[in-house]
Length: 57
Image: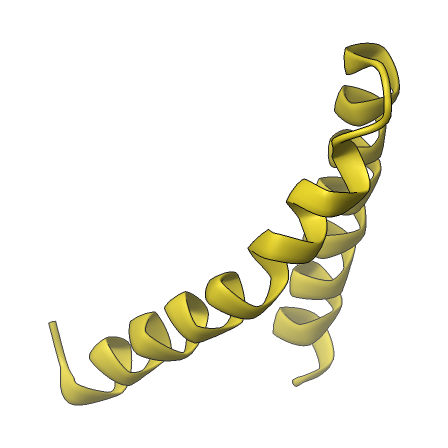
């Protein structure tokens, strides 16, 4: 791994640490079906953002 990839991994882990507690709080009072639907929506948005970044960035 190059230095840039290691820094990207560290940044990804930092974002995960910031987002995960809020995700747990948000999904605590919801049924599993709506939780899975929300995860699918967020993953779809992330995929679109990554595709647009690769296309235009």
